[in-house]
Length: 216
Image (tube, rainbow, N blue to C red):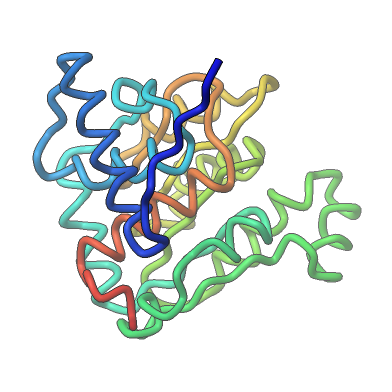
């Protein structure tokens, strides 16, 4: 079989990728909600998985609430260093926000050991003490979502946004459903799929929808 490569300049690769995504969505007869389309397409771009056009779930009014939080200098807390590395900090910092991941902190490891919990859950407890609006972007650990659910239902935490997209099998589906039962703003992917890259992609989609310059 002869392989035919597209001649695409480096600066045009992303633009061409999104054009392909749009072509395929049309061929599948999928019409995305206009206000959420850039975010859903960015997740598809990151994952090459068109299932997200169907499985991404959004709470009522979540987009504007997320934008308001970012404009107010929200902190983004991820459950993995990979997720944190993927967030565009130049754009986030333009609005006064910072990205954090506490999973590797010594005090988090100690708290997890003492309390018999995972480090991801202990990291949520540490993040809850941060001031200002908080955006939790969970792409790996369902225990982080479960801890968020506990703190929210106990009235101890009210995140500006929870991005719930952990990937895997054990308590993954259930943890997402728990978050979607709360009254906090959420963007979640029903089912087993997700990942740190997806969590970062959602954060970046929100940032780029606010600032198309990407902090350049």
